[in-house]
Length: 108
Image 1 (cartoon, one colour):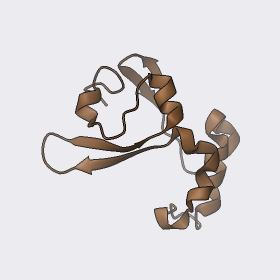
Image 2 (image 1 turned 90 degrees about the vertical axis):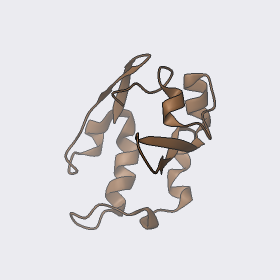
Image 3 (image 1 turned 180 degrees about the vertical axis):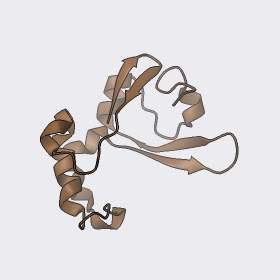
C-alpha cells in the first residue's frame, strides 16, 4: 500500500503477509480477497483470480507491462477511471518515464 505525499513523492509501506485485513485501512477488502486466494503460506497467482474478483476495484486498477532494456521502464496497459479522475489524466498507453513529475518520481 502506498500514500501520495506530494506531487512527486510517495510513501510506501510494507506489511507481513499475515497482517489482519482490518489493519490495512481502505485496502481491507482487497486484503481479504488476497487472503482468500492464498494456499497456506504460498502467495496467490494471477490464475487464482477471476476478473469479477476485482469488481470493487475496477476504477483503481493500474496494470503495467515492464519494457525490456535499460533504463527500467514500464507502459501502462490499463489506467483505471478513478485513477484518471484522481490524477486528472488517462495514462493508458503511457510509459512510466513520461509520467515523471505528474505521477512518478525518479525514486519510484
